[in-house]
Image (cartoon, rainbow, N blue to C red; front, side):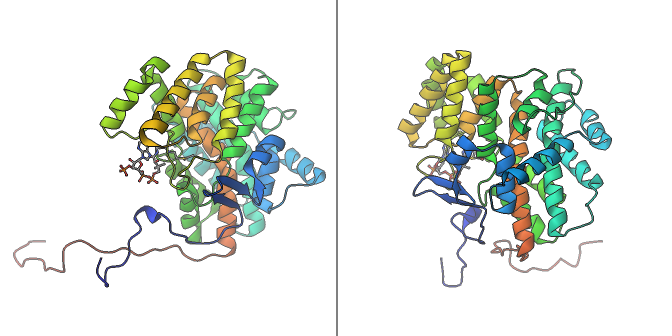
Length: 377
Ligand code: ACO
């Protein structure tokens, strides 16, 4: 690098672009705090609805605040006809992430506050979107099996209702709890790629739904949220534990990225993994799926030994969603249902202290040249 060459931080690795009060990731202590609270404590003690209010407002709700929000959320779960149509008319060849992206876009078009960018309106929009995404995800999985939509149930909380709308059967308390834990853990993670995308869109003074739609697009990629789906495809490809080590050696030899491993920020393990792995273990024990546990552990141990690279949250959440009964392509839309909390919190934080996000680039194309005279137009 010469004195005149700007320093380029590929992928913005290590670059601090702004402050945030929403979450703190500390790789040195392997910790993740939402508004100051360790995510493990939130996963142990809080409902998804409490975590949503915490992320949006900065504080855990009082019992009255929580009850008011729960009533609001339960009343906002049913899909508008336009959103339902957008989902049911989507070709079955469309990936569920494409369907939920379109459904959120339509939901934005008809939101009563769509033209109002005030902080109060943005919070109302965030709450309505949070309430509606589970029905989008559930309906899309059901229609792919030729099944009818199931109406939301106001007697169930967020987690139990999402499972009810998807499967139409009451899952056990233990199963609902595993799902709740995953939703809490996926809710927020500072300036990850999709959240940063949402902040970039917001920084142009665009609207909340446009920012969320863009974030869904960023989340879809297998280097980000798409990895939870990719983990299950990988498990299917490997088959069982006895084939895991040979499969891994071949995959690494051909320079494949092993899905569900590695992280841009955590280099000594993802702070969320132990909590999600414990939840997965409970589910595996309930279902007697020791074969899946053996595959999970064998591959994880071999990856640590070969590359020193540890699992990220997508590694335990993928098999957990599989055991709960979700189709593999539905896994990343479940991540959307949860991350909508973090995205919208960041959209509101960005809008409240906005600066257009517009980095520079270092040009490395041809020097200035001129169009030859002979070129015709
Ligand atoms: N499999 C194989 N090798 C890996 C993996 C992996 N999963 N992750 C990192 N490495 C290797 C790289 O090949 C590279 O090796 P090299 O120095 O010999 O070239 C080194 O580790 C550094 O990796 P980078 O890709 O430069 O690390 P980066 O911080 O850019 O990537 C990422 C992080 C994208 C998450 C990467 O680890 C990856 O692709 N993982 C698989 C996809 C995945 O699980 N994504 C989910 C992210 S977490 C989430 O969204 C909840």
